[in-house]
Length: 509
Image (cartoon, rainbow, N blue to C red; front, side, top):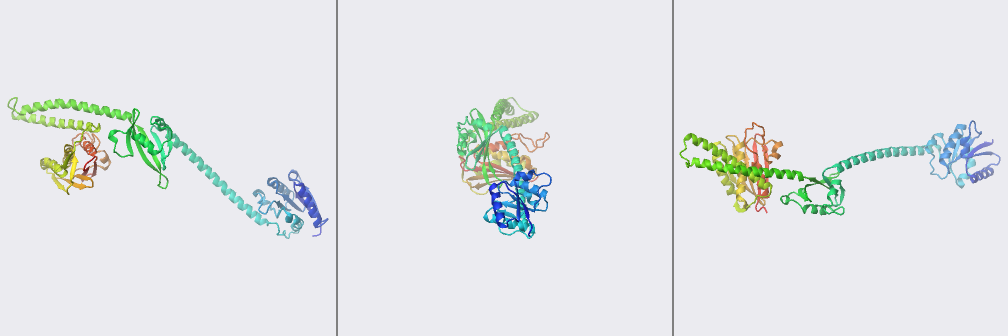
């Protein structure tokens, strides 16, 4: 091409302008006409701007200002080629001007400066720019599109993370509100035993526990255990009762696991049960008082009936004898009920003394079975006793263990239909012996098995229940076995009977 090439150069740097004038003057004198404009000057041009064949825009110092200038250059001459002067080969053209079709890219260094005249000529002739120091327009578009895709992906991820952070913050706020509003004291320890969380109720207890700073788990439990109730000693460490100043607290601990099921820490709850204990004591005192008040007149009535039956007040005819025997049976029944109430109250208050004696467990249980044999015979119920081996010397309170077996046999007699079967066995077990009473009676619904050892509880509590009783027998069984440091379990199926198993340790201390 032999004609004059008019070149628009958008450049703010005066030294670079001088360098360009020198380069174009030395390359082909008189062939290039350079028109310089500043970035802001090009942007401010209104209407039809200067006519030119090629444009070059410097993006080195102000990419944003250069982007606006490039848009203005394209609006003045839609078909002109626009070269990009960049600080390095890795320079990325701003995504918002990629669609202008900018290119080639010229790095501002000695080689790039020297190539400017040939680049301008190549752009006018349409043969494509020299490869040295330049990047093809398609590559620029590709790189900028990749950058835009990455930027968009990061933006979406950022929005998602912000949303998750806000949701977590909201959930954390809810949990903190619940924890701080709890009436129970709550303390959380991590796997290293360091206290991480304590709600206001728990912190209010710390002065009473003389804790000057956040305690370690062992220290905390040790302080609580100092005032543990006497009847709670030796029980499961996960639940116990303790005194803090003038109040009683139930302490419960549970393991906390993470999403993978691994142990993450230990949560401890302190529940104020002072009022419950006061009500329980009042109830026990009332039961004890009523029982004593009932025992005295019952004893007098029983003695009077015995005198009548013995003929101390004269001969008794057949009709009188019948009514006196009815009175005697009911007096004995009421006396047994009063005795049960008193025994249960003493056990719950920790006042019942266990007198241990060396005992052959099988012979003791067999004696109880023999005492019930006549009652079972009258109902045509088979009563069997077996011994599976020597349990060795057992140190137990013979009177109380007799009462346990008697209560179980009494229940079996009551709830087993005529013609049924009751099997009693004694077998050795590691560290002690096991008494089992199995019947073919009515059984216990699964939803009531856990309640049968509670006071005044029966499997049929309706007013028209078929089986009379107070619901104290099994409660007394549990208290006696617990006092011996043993255990009682039951397996049952409605309509097929029940099996009660009593484990008693050899020594129990």
